Length: 158
Image: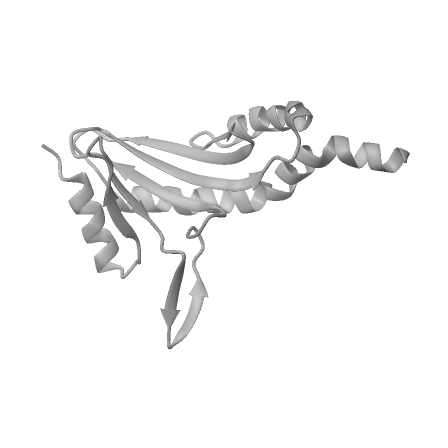
């Protein structure tokens, strides 16, 4: 049996990276950022914590994959705006080879899966999460624009 979860937890502890750890019913270990941290007596929001742009790393010790998610990048206000969004997803999913942008229940999310074969590397997992945040920051305005494209045109005609 592999020790992916334990290795990742050790990586976080060594670098003092605050992530919560939990386990779901399928024995998948989930790591997520807290919503807020108190630093020098001041409560501050954490990137990747909370509801918006929530980062989750999913590991199993008997699997060779690490799944990394960033949930709720943005909401989709109208069903009929999805065609432009899906076109953009095709473009982004071609540009970013390891990141997949997708929509689920009118919410835009991103996912990356990293294969390991008895060579789990916690640093690669965390670096991939960092790359995902940079990609989302880079593409956020395009995503928002594609969602609101039709409503902007309608508003201009009124």
